[in-house]
Image (tube, rainbow, N blue to C red; front, side):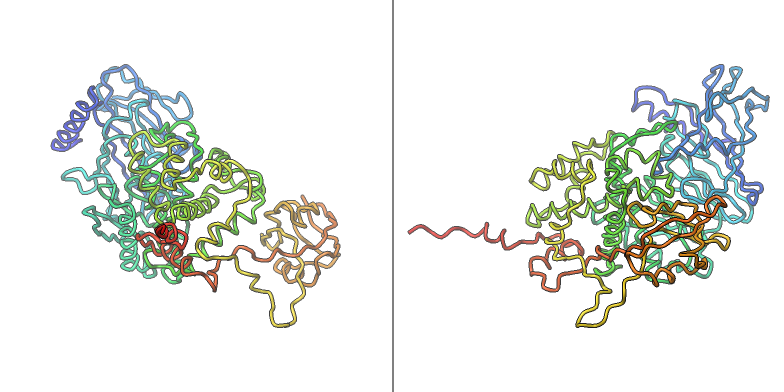
Length: 628
């Protein structure tokens, strides 16, 4: 039963919104979520849905969730659905398509729909319920009348006695400890709900409340440290943009020994290991995840491609701009961790080097362009397989590199007075409204800030598979790719080169199995298949854990016979041993960098706001000698 005060509040909101849009908004829907046996991984949902007196209503459940571009068929987890009048009289309900149900209302003014949702997928984009806690996302949980998403929604949580904490970026219902209010369905879908016994850490920035929710701290994760550092990163990002765009913000930090992150308009969901505060590398990785997902509150959720909203939750939405949404966000995620003082210059350059190596050693970069990677996210990015490295490129990773190069190009073109930072802020000022930006509009902003024509450069970087050129950026910042660290100097004897086949293997049940074969490697050319079991080289058995050591005994160019078991049949493959490519993509600062280059590097990595003046710029500003 809806409390009287709450009913009046929701009706007032609906009437107010009706006045804004010129038509009366539908009455609100009220959901009650119950967890009578959380150890069984179910949430029970009761939805009280006004009908307006119609003879029937069609209910819809999304098939995907924003930020994760794959049709996930959430309706497959719905069970035991039934419908009744408010007085408890049963009503006919049946499926019409895979994610829709029709209720015959018999002119009842309100119907009550009940169903159960199975929740045991530990990911940021689905639901998880067990005896310890519940993570509830909107898309895989809430049915709503199709085509009537512009209404308000109430959510009431009835928690098991042992759970004391609930959290959501939604506004709380007045007088309700575990009740929340969403202004429309988009907001409902975009606002996770947590219930359990997490440790919570509130802080305030720019007058806006923030909350870090740490589930699974135990005695391992350093909660106070993580809260203080999340606050520092949030302050750095608010300073970067100049404002906080949200009324409140929640970091859901689920320490579940899994991984992933998903952005929301006023929150983010993070999954990580509770041990990450115990090592510097692990903790920097977590801080980078925090920074990446928070940056989406501006870039991706409010400054967004025109295609990404309003959402059609029942079919794919295609865009070629995920390199902006995810690639630019990946670039700034780690860069702002550096500017906030958590990582050293060397650590940041190491992270960027890994991204460069990932792209430059992936054969897929020569097959799929950045535009195609974004457009095909629905069929490729979330369906990775053993051939992904050969056939595709990540819009996250290559997008990060394009952002790095674009930032350097803008800085060079403007003598250090402007950067990609300025372009993003200008784009936000112009296109963060309801419509979003088109690719050509974003390009125009970039060119306006840079003061040069970027169209050809951007087309090559995004629309083709041409190799990226790092020379301009390295020269501007005074960087270089380091020489092979294994190279011996001073006449010292060098180790003989070890043999290499270029395939990834994994021990499975005591068997050495091939799991990836990259194009252009000796294994690929020799006909090795994913799924082969490696048994012997030249009829000498290879122990499951001993392949790398055995290959060190062979020299590049030697021809061998590789014995494999393929679908239980023994097969001999003639393979020519190769030489493992030497590291080529490790960034380091030039030992003889010029003062200008050092200033450019500091402006980039330390986030100095003052323009950097180059020698050429100083000479242009020097007045010519007077004519006598």
